[in-house]
Image 1 (cartoon, helix red, strand yellow):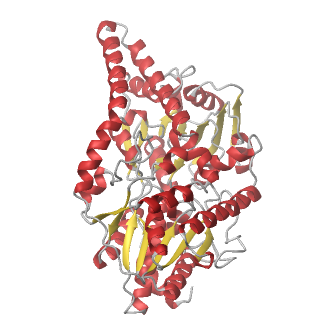
Image 2 (cartoon, one colour):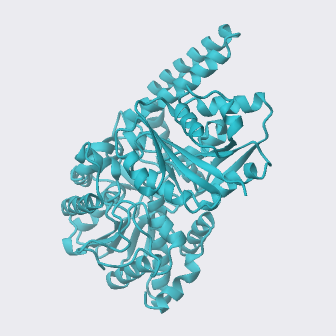
Length: 559
């Protein structure tokens, strides 16, 4: 049987490379996994070797195409699989779907296209699929494409070479797959300039390719650049005008009478303040009981931890200590907002692991293992249930207990269409737990609201004015009608700003993103009774799971 080689070009991908290697190791059609470290300055090579990959080290950063070419020269396998090292949501069966047509000689090259992963990457690949780095290709054909000196233009060159030589090319949908964008990995401005470098390489290739038509192409390129610069200048003004118009049509939040019991579910420390800081402050000021539940401690945020540690590669214990550090930040922030310490619950489940747990990990005998802490059970001694295994029933058990004991009248949880996997999974777990408690307690009828934190590029660009009303992204406005805005009083906004400043670990790397939530209002989606089950079903369809159908069984077993 023919087999293939996986080649992962990587530059400073220590945080994500191990996860991709582990997925590839589950694919029997792969004979070897090669990581080409393209001048990495972090622990990419050490992590990759420890995970079991063959590692080729390029002393200087030579570019993605050069790294791909180095890997292809090293191997003797007939079929090559190229994948980005920062993918999220990839499954072994999707890897097989990429390489199988080439192994069976049904195609010369396949290209993986992101679908339903996150709007920003879905859109970019729908517009320009030839930029996708997920490809399987015959080795002899790849070597003829002359990519030894290419950089970010490698995929464009490969696509053009395939077209010129009439290759058989298939596009393969990769559902629920996305990748970490440059602005997230390197920070807004560093990532932005890295993205400009990518566009520069691509434009340079087209420029050289079309030398016969310089009078048309080059002025056209300059015109596009000029439009981009002018567009950036007008962007914020346009956004202010658009937001003010859209905000007029979003009804205001109806303030509840005193005596409410409010529960906020947050995937990570800081999400509760970003999305609901003003609402929490208002509730505590009028004497309402407020509880906040953190499903994870955000302990796998490699970029933030690396900022603290510098060149020293983090170890599992460092990620655990980082989790405790983020807990303290959350307690300080919530103290400013008026939440009592006894009403703050840390569950301690794995950061960046909630969605895969929902999808795949149901049996206590086979729990998920965190790629950061290397733990497969809650390791935090101050957690609600230390030692709870990293499986879906355990998460539901914790949430069921808190809901049943606290008996909230209002619940705030992440939107199931948030583009961050932990957020949408936390929302699904919360909705499933609410349904489970409702089945046991007929009089349990909290009003549920969802909130949005991540939606592609939404909230990532810096604002010229913090007084722009916060409104959902267009796709959310078009799809649903039950959005409400919660206007913040001056004191509420001031306290929210102070609370955000407590998250010092996050301010080092995503300061712009955090303070983009310092707005005159917050936004929530008001769920009806029918919305709860419908949203879980929708989430299950997107993830090809049916955990909600097992909720009753989970509770009956006493999990």
